[in-house]
Figure 1 (cartoon, one colour):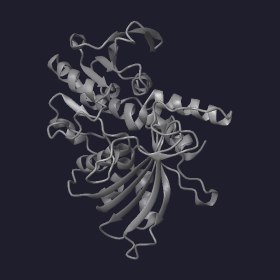
Figure 2 (spheres, helix red, strand yellow):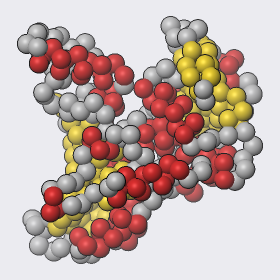
Figure 3 (cartoon, one colour):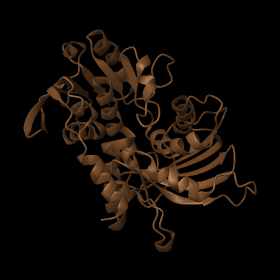
Figure 4 (tube, one colour):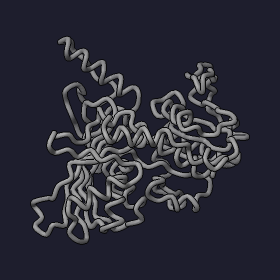
Length: 358
C-alpha cells in the first residue's frame, strides 16, 4: 500500500466530526439525489457515519417513485417541492443553480441549513463559501445558506492554502484538466459511449458535450465572456479562490480544459510567493496538511494521476519543483489531482454539514 493510500484509509476510518461530538441525529434532505453528486452524497453520509435520523431523497418528477439504497434499505425518491422541507435539519443541494435559487429559500424558511453545490449563491456577500480545511470560521456568518465551492477551486485551494499560510501567495496560474464527472452522469456516459464508438470505428454525434469527447480535449464547455475572453469556469475559479482565501486582490488567472478522463480533475499550478520557497519546504508543508497526500516520487516518475485520485478523499499533490523562469526563487510549479465528485463536491458538503451540526 502506497503512503497516500495509507493516509486516505486512516482518514476514512476516523469517525466523522458530528459523530465524535455526539451530535443529535438529523433529518437530512438530499436534493438532486439521483445525480452523480447526489449519489456520492449518500455514500459519503453513510461512510462517515453522519448521524441521520431520517433521510429524504428529492429529485425531479421524472425520478419520483424510484428508490435508492441508504444504509442497507431502499429509500423512495420524492418530487422536489417547497413543502417537503418541513422538519428538515440539513438540506444538501446538488440540482443546479435554477433549482437552488427556487427551493433553497423555502428550505431555510422551514428551518433547514442549506449546503448548496451550485454556483447560485457562491459570490453572494452574505453567503459563506467554505472549504473546512481552509476557512471553517466563515461558517459562523451563515444565515441559512452555505455555498460549496467550484470543484476546481476546492482542489486547487487545498494545495495552495498550506503554502499561502507559510508564505503569502502573490500570483497563481491555474491550468485545469477536468474530467467528465464535472459535467454530471450524462457526460460520463457520453465519454464511455464515444470512446467505444471510436474504438469500433463507428460514427458518434455528441449530444451532451459541444465537441467530440473521445481522444480529444477542448476548452471547458461554459460560455466565453466576450470582454475578458475567459470562460465561466475560469472566472469562477479566480473569484472563488479570492473569496475562500479572503484575499480579494489575489492575482490569479486560469485556463480550464475538459479532458477525456472519466472521473477526477487534475490541475497544474504555478505559484509566486512573497519570499523564496524551496521545494523541500513546500513538500514538508504539503505532507503535513490535512486532506492532502504527497505523491512526489521523481525516481519512479510517479506523480498525481486522476486514476489514483478517483475514490480518494485526499487531494494528491506532487511534481513540486522550482520554476526556473523566475530567478528570484519565489516561484514553484506543482501538480494536483482530486476526485471531483468527492472532495470537489459531495465530501466537502458533508464535511460542512458535520461542522454545522457540532
